Length: 261
Image 1: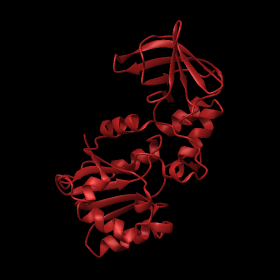
Image 2: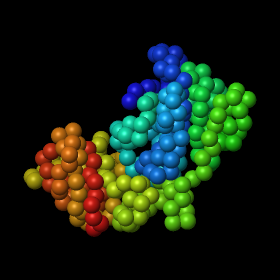
Image 3: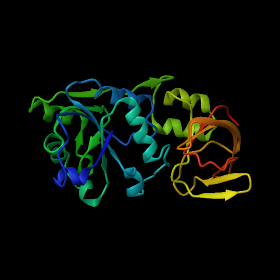
């Protein structure tokens, strides 16, 4: 998968996207069932290149507006995109300049250097300065240019839309089965990029700095995965007061939880 920087793309510092693209846009925290459905809209639209636009940091974190914390690191999110069949990921730094871009102007950049010829967004998607442009307005603007736009309804589970907020709440309450049903895979603790302290018998990771979402205090059966653990290694990990202790000197990138506390 090719990873490009939004600023380089729109300022023409590098090549335009390598062919006409099918795009979707979002924060994609968790890459849950709803996100997977949205990404599925841009896969297999040959000859269009399946492309995802996302953010290096959650805009809520940058703006310090009720940021609830993150489920996944950027690296893990990109890996999941690639596993789903995405060919290009474009990373946006939510800067002051970007935040003042009108939705209409953002769309023009997607069509121009972004080479967009198909767009898929959730029906609650909004973009632009002051969130001035919604999903249906984007579709109307694209229709003027004969660019198909799919406005996708949310995926529901248990009578409610699947959302990152629901998943965070389920994990924090220890409902790993419920969270897994919303994610479409087992719950994991992503320790990539977290501060770590080697100790006798293992490594301790501090999830608090990044507000990385973790389950309640307790002991969990798990599989460890990382560069040196491509096939996983069984372990029993413990969570206590925002920290995760892994009884291994091999530094994992993620911890896939098998059981609750």
